[in-house]
Amino acid sequence: MIQIAVKTLGTLARGLRVVEAVAAHQPVGLTELSRLLDEDKSALQRTLATLHDAGWIHPLPDSPPRWEVSTKPLIVAGRAIASSPLPIRARALLGSLRDATGETAHLAIVDDGAIAVVDVAEGKQIVRTALQVGQIHPPEVSAAGRAVCARLTPEARTALTSHPEALLDDAGYAEIRTRGWSVCEGAIAPGSTSIAAAVLNSSGHPIGAVVVSGPDTRLTPDRFAEVGALVRDVAAELGNVR
Image 1 (cartoon, helix red, strand yellow):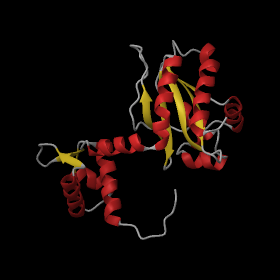
Image 2 (cartoon, one colour):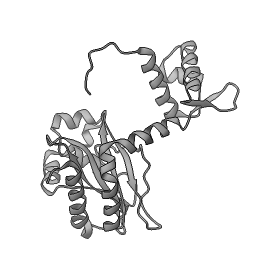
Image 3 (cartoon, rainbow, N blue to C red):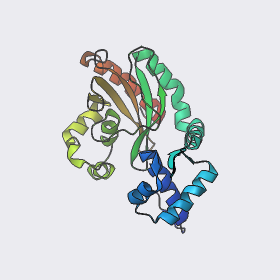
Image 4 (cartoon, rainbow, N blue to C red):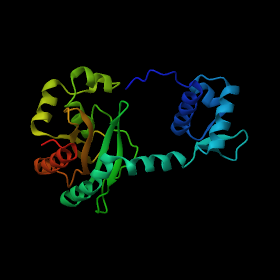
């Protein structure tokens, strides 16, 4: 994370923590939020009222009220993704990758210690892998996480995860770097297989991953090399690395 040498606003930080807590536990009331955040109820109530007035959360018709996140965060996130250079460049490539493989393709971005889905080209088959924008990939076992971790130092890998014991060994990551793609079979969703390649910036640092996911009945081991090469090429084109 980049450090900016200015004084931060504690009230704004508190408000953002409240939005995140509401999103994670909704619908949630004042008492439960106070316990979760270890915040004074009176101050927390003022924060909730401010967020409600600004349109970020809304109460259910309960007494006392329980809170949910409004659609505003989705709208803001959608606008950010729609104008972000990497997702814009990825959109057409993801569609082509989906058509070439017959499976769902998506882009995940590394941001603030998380690997988050930012755009999805859903497969056209009736039975397919479905992902939501904003979904987080575990760095230890997901294909995206493994592809990203393969391009990090051992110290950076450990910093990215809260379960370092679940990381692959150095030889496992070396193999991923050599072939240019990673695979995850059933670790995230039973019956689903994913193949991913890291998107690298001009310094060779991973900034995201391109992923193809599908049922293991179609994305079988005999297709791994073929699909892996396609995923690797798209990731290379996005990162301008060949």
